[in-house]
Image 1 (cartoon, rainbow, N blue to C red):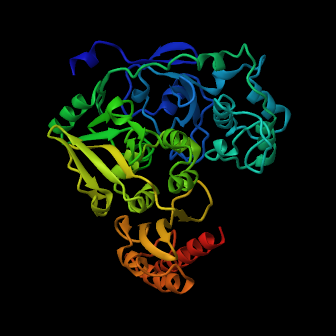
Image 2: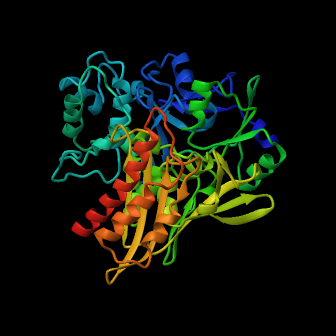
Image 3: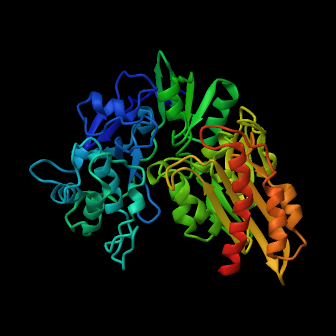
Length: 478
């Protein structure tokens, strides 16, 4: 790792190159910024649920060389932004010359106590600069200026009320021709810098290649990999975890594959959910239904599909959808690559067949998808919540008969799982209410749902059966 010791870690903040300095490798971007007087970003929850800490990072774009991407500064370690470019609310405008987003929020009464306002400003600015935002007819969740209100789904305000904030967002025009932040998007973002930081609490490295990452992972059984840090950041902030070695893999090109062929879709494990959503552009309808229900835009801007699967959580949102799509995983190690069906990947609570020295490299989804698909998430809130139950459906019906059925479940057992008995109760039978009601009784008994603060076992079972009936009636009426 000698190449990583040749340079002092630094990043560009509001146009000024700033050394990261002698800090713990687990110091968050939020704490680092505030220690340097940039106190607009604040800690409201330390879990990525309130958006008060939102800042903008220059990231590779799907529709432009660079996109200003809003992320939760409370979750990212400052070491992960070595060599990168960050804009805070203070860098967007000044009291004498407000940024258009700041001005609209001010004149439309979009702030009372002001605690959350800088976070709203950064999230709103990311959407303001989103390539492809154009005037449209408008709707409840999209402004006539093309503003997607879901861009603010990760920002909470407890005193102003959201109507004036929405009004400010919908009043924004396109950036003027002399806008420096818009002009910046026409050139590439900073390349990921090879990073090596050591502090008494541990070590942080950013390898330059997948081979290098796999070598370190094979040599150190105490290593933890991090991409968007939407899970690890919570463990560090709330539970005090301090991994001895953290390996950043989010910008490794070998983990950022995207291809849509005749027979399969290949998704790199380090692609963020936002990147996948935009690149797929609705071509896999089941995933298109799942993405808006996965946490918030702020989280999806950082969270990776590999990270969601890598945790092995039984309540992740991507596993039920990917199980229904019959996805496979490519696991990489120094020994080479191997392919595993996702249905065989989970082995126990937060346990998988992935060895300690392996990384998820690619998620492979066969094509074409089933004609009838759906993703149902039962949670206490419509958006930005953890599911009590999640179900993915992929059903193929021809001439009134069910030719194939795949159903993925989350939240009803120690692992995500396929509803095999329900699938067997459907395949080869007529696509009728009678068949579906019988299968719904089978589905209600799948898994081993438990009682917890999110839902009771009985409720989870009831939701499984009702979900299948809902799926059927929605398809029949479509």
